Length: 264
Image 1 (cartoon, rainbow, N blue to C red):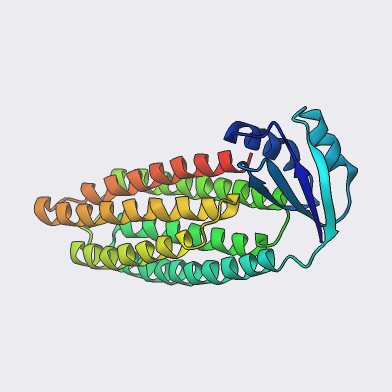
Image 2 (image 1 turned 120 degrees about the vertical axis):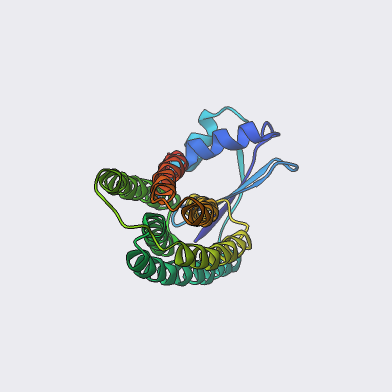
């Protein structure tokens, strides 16, 4: 792997940093961009020599100059990739386990809220699996994974809306509110743990940001299902459960749109 260091005199604020990212992130050879705004230095880690890197920097007219290029093992990036892999495996196991738990208990208790949340957990588990595949990949591939994740969430949300509408129209037995509340409390704890694990990575890469967005959405969803379970108990009605199901899928769509923006 090559390490190319550029001195960029006119790079003195985040706007120039974003310009450079937009200009370079389409190159598949690039593994990582490291910015030092204080010293106006950009370090590019890339697989092979490519004159297009210097050409694109010159086109920005920021006075860029190549000051150093060397072959490097880049142990820091390797360590970062290993850390990301461990964290993603942990949250993948948590989310897939709760997909099984919530789907099973959701069907038993006839709770649309739990079923919806279980599908969201499945989507998250799939996203984490895709993210594991992306660790150590090119920036272009990481953005592609973020986009794929967003489209997958939208698909699940549309299927969920259809099921909510069906249950509104057709007669349904009262969902088991006790199971709704208990399982959702445990899911809330699991998602809070997942978010903490992801934040430990301190990564600003698209696939990790996507994972954190999904997990933040899950925490909101868990609280909503708990509230719905309480309302089912108080009102003896199926509608709080169906309403939270609809809200869950709206949150999923909103999160998916944010994911697609990350993948641009």
